[in-house]
Length: 110
Length: 118
Image (cartoon, rainbow over all chains, first blue to last red; front, side, top):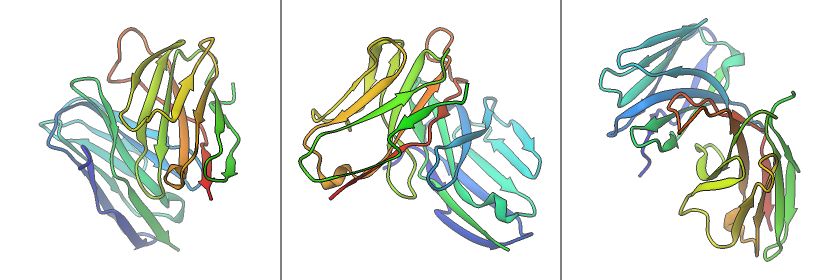
């Protein structure tokens, strides 16, 4: 059992559609981060959220940290083929342990 | 600085052989992490160093695995007597940690070393 479960595991959508990826846990996290990873490369940090209820926007990407700091979501508006990749949430528990989520593989079809 | 580098990028070996990977972190970073990642899954933590001290090791790191960071700069990860189950991407990351582990610590990842054990 993974500490951070992501859903869906796979997502294939048409260019221009919107999507949401979820990251859930039964544990409280001091912070949550979202990464994007392209094939053959390491993960690249997109954002860090630290306050319950916090919302951050990065162009067409909106990140939200749950009020109880146990979950997070990533919403992409008008997806583009360049958004294709593996999206990973990750976070520090209140015990300073760092975990990655199970990953969501996104394919945006032109 | 060009970021975290890892060598080799790819390694194919036969079962039972030993392999060693190298990671060069961002120069001023004091913390260095090793992860293992299988296809389509999230990375799994293996171990991390603060300067030259190895502070934590995952239970995933069996006695066939050893990591060093002798001068607090580059690090090596050695796998002895490789098994087919060791096939994975091995990722290294570094961070600049101020004080004890910080929940805003930002890790910068290298491109990884893909290991294939035949």
